[in-house]
Image 1: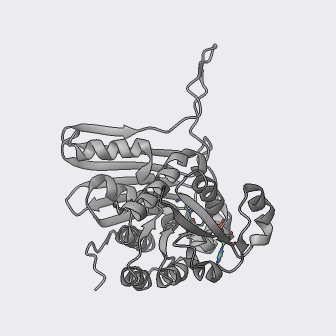
Image 2: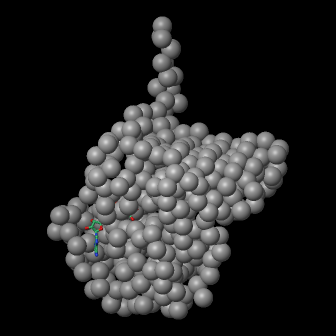
Image 3: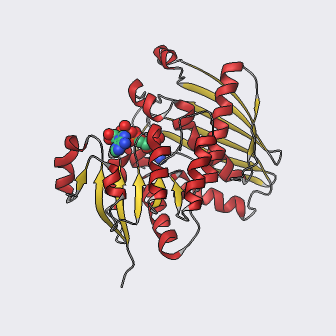
Length: 342
Ligand SMILES: NC(=O)c1ccc[n+]([C@@H]2O[C@H](COP(=O)([O-])OP(=O)(O)OC[C@H]3O[C@@H](n4cnc5c(N)ncnc54)[C@H](O)[C@@H]3O)[C@@H](O)[C@H]2O)c1
């Protein structure tokens, strides 16, 4: 008989509704109950999907003995509390990145201590690790195809600005968006980021200054093993969701270009290319989002390794915090690469 994960889902906003649809395609997952403080707004949509056991109170879901695993897709400012409560209720947890909005990592470390004490699994939503293109680069780097990696270059640009109130709940450009790139850089290079220098500003929306955020960033990284990295971010690429990664080494280079929605090229007197990057994260990383969930289920049922765990999110948060300090001071910042829960 097929083994199952009996799941509760907390948070059904932009990310949560996308994940719900992907989770429903995985046969090993039974969705027992879902929770969102504004469940009334989406109740009809959920009923249409056949998800009828709904609540506004996530504690109800945590006290349900039929649920062994919870998926946390709430806004970032709630993650520490909800993950701690879920760990203390003995549930396995998948949580979206990051764990915290705070610049002080002690609270995040306490969350990881609760996870460890209760001996439950915690996977973090660094979905890009499971993107087939980036995964191919990762595997080729590990197989030595480009010799010793010396430089990673990441271009990561969103299609458009986010509302300020959403930014205040899920974090600004560094904490919410570049967070993925810090993790990707570290993952590709197989080494921790030990120093970061960030320059940035508001070239698109000057009112972002009112909430202490930027829309454009250029970052230089140094890794513990001596290698380097470059990240460029923008909140608005008018041509779509621009996601490219390159790793350069002593014996060559690997690079992944954008995934496009068309391979058609139009030849007229101008020669137009119809290729455009896929428009949004939900489409560009659809496979990655499903694969990260399948890997999490596999880890619960068969004890295989997690895609990204607590220490990975702490490392990315540290770099984001150091990068913020670099932006504020104009100086490069060292990053602590030692990790311990003791
Ligand atoms: N991995 C990715 O590619 C990716 C993409 C988008 C968002 N995210 C992450 O997902 C998280 C959610 O982001 P979003 O854009 O979906 O935000 P959102 O505001 O659209 O959705 C959050 C939802 O959580 C609900 N919520 C908040 N507090 C709650 C509580 N205490 N109990 C129950 N429900 C609660 C809200 O009502 C809302 O529906 C953030 O941490 C963000 O960084 C990750």
